Length: 200
Ligand SMILES: C[S@@+](CC[C@H](N)C(=O)[O-])C[C@H]1O[C@@H](n2cnc3c(N)ncnc32)[C@H](O)[C@@H]1O
Image 1 (cartoon, rainbow, N blue to C red):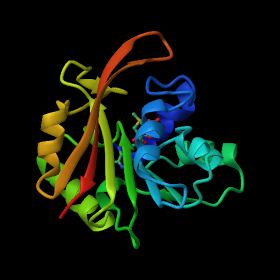
Image 2: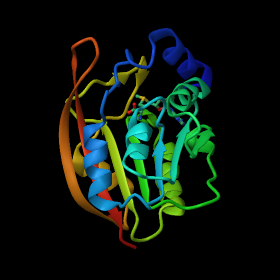
Image 3: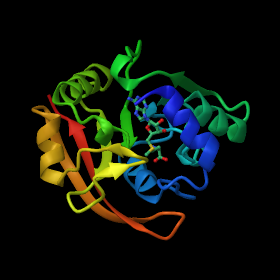
Image 4: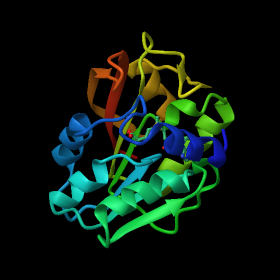
């Protein structure tokens, strides 16, 4: 999994044709606006070229950070939203050392690429550093009956309970959702979503 690989996926396929494309990220918006006002600091981890940032800006959110290892993907999102005051961070999430905290951590279909248990544990340690007690975490992955590969790479599939267990102690699950995502080519991918509050 390299930046060049992901840059190539976005450049070759086009952001509106990648399998994970959503014209409107409905569940993300539903869950974020359930727990956060527009004054909240939101980070979209592995956000790529997602239109979530556009939609958050349109709702008045003004402290939005998008993190991704693909410069190509972030460049496409940035070209859409222009001069909007978004923090763009090009990094592998496994190397990221944020110098601030966030009220909401959102990740749709990035965490599931961490198939190595040590990477998964480091990810949740990073969430604990970046999201103080009282903050919220929204993570979506392929469900147990979802595909075992995404974009040509293996993924770890989760049940809602399995994803909550992966978080470790200190998170209270507030809501779980299932979603059948329809890809641009008409296929269906089963996702699960977990919204949790950092409680200790
Ligand atoms: C399936 S796409 C989902 C993109 C976006 N969240 C969405 O819903 O449209 C996965 C994204 O995670 C990014 N990604 C994969 N592994 C990553 C890593 N280790 N660190 C940072 N970003 C990563 C990819 O570049 C890609 O943009």
